[in-house]
Image 1: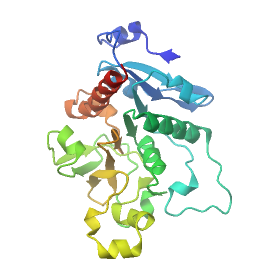
Image 2: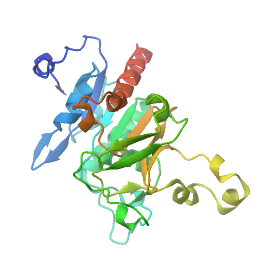
Image 3: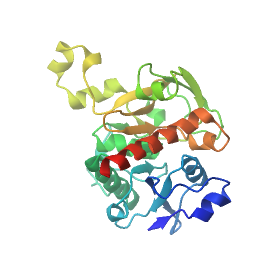
Image 4: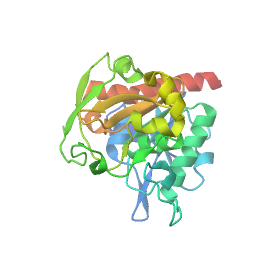
Length: 271
């Protein structure tokens, strides 16, 4: 098991977590044959007082044994064709090793009721696993702005009132975020045909039709920016809050704090 050591927390200038602190699994990325995890993810997560276990692609489910939460980071990799609105299965569907690791971890966490925080591509993978459809390129989405930006503050997002994210962020209505994604979750109206018959959609109040995951935030061009499920203990964020956390942004840190709190609850439920 690869876990952050007490000396590592001290090196970051943080308190060493309590011996009975929850353990959160952080799936690593493998680039150029080496596993790594971005410093900002580690720092933002470590600040919440949890213990961190790093998960590799090989047999990820046994590595998650004893964990109390899961973080799925962003990254660039091939996802299953069936996740997309414009799926093209003619050439077959070869799922990347990294995507398979994400899928195994998500299945394991959902089956056990373990809380999940998905970031960027990790958020998209969670949506795909719940049969929500993705769009391959934001440029295909009519009216979309450039969502692949190096800017620290790329654009605003509007947080949907009454949602879990809104309550977590003290009913904040709008915030500035970064944006480093090409793919996107399809908007709600594009999801409905995949879950409800035409008759159902025409005979009912469309706003009352429940999708597997709820939408929490949107950018001004209609691109979904956050989604999840309060009941399933899932929070998915399209931007990278950890980049703001390391700069001392207390509001963004609350997103990682949410996972830590849910992990503590999950740990207590297992004791």
